[in-house]
Amino acid sequence: MSAFSEAALEKKLSELSNSQQSVQTLSLWLIHHRKHSKTIVSVWFNELRKAQVSRKLTFLYLANDVIQNSKRKGPEFTQDFAPLIVDAFKHVYREGEESCKKQLGRVLSIWQERAVYEQSLLEQLSQVLDKESGERLSRLVEEACMLLADYSGRLAAEIDDRRQLTRTLTVFLQSQKDGLAQNEQKLEVRIEHCSRPFCVRLIHLTLICPQSLACSMKCVENLNSELISHLRKDHFISFSLSSVQCVCTAHTVSKVSV
Image (cartoon, rainbow, N blue to C red):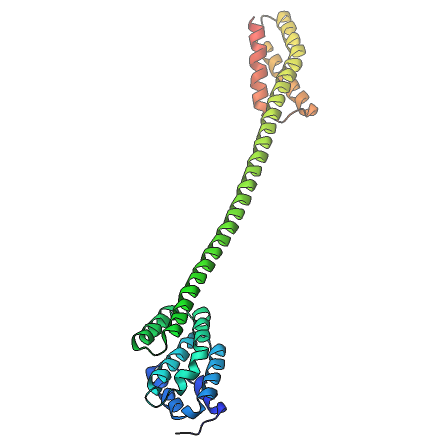
């Protein structure tokens, strides 16, 4: 096997993949150089913290393989990993992928079944997983509450905007209705005011020429034309001239009939 050096170890750790062959090959190399166990464990922990999220669990698999397979040749790795293994579990649980949580539990179960470490250390690892799981759940709940509060705030603001828009539209529509009613009243007064002198003239002309109905109708048409022209010049309100003509004609003819 190749000679040991920290640079060589760092290179091999950077090339470590999640395959079983890759883990076992590097594990045999580390066990072969077990006299450097302290350095190996220190470099392993530093590289673990720098590793990509997707590779962190692989470092735990490597440690598991080294710890279990090195016991037959000596206790070096079991002893040297012990002070760092709790922090390593915490780091992988917090920084690793979501699937890491379940795999860490499986590794711990194997160690408990095979008594890889003393019960006190195994309990610490179990507490780490329980505590981290509780803290993670608490963080998720807190994030959910923050999202809900943000959504509620935006929803309340939107409701206020819609209420303000509704009030504005209500005021606008009411003002339009009021204006329309006022204009209708003014129109009625104006029509009544404008029609009186023309009606008097029509009655007078009809009395002068009662035998000529055609003459009377011609007078009506002339008076209507004058009334329409008068309203156009006055610019009082814009409405259909034909409607005014019909109203005035009906009004004047009814008076003539009387």
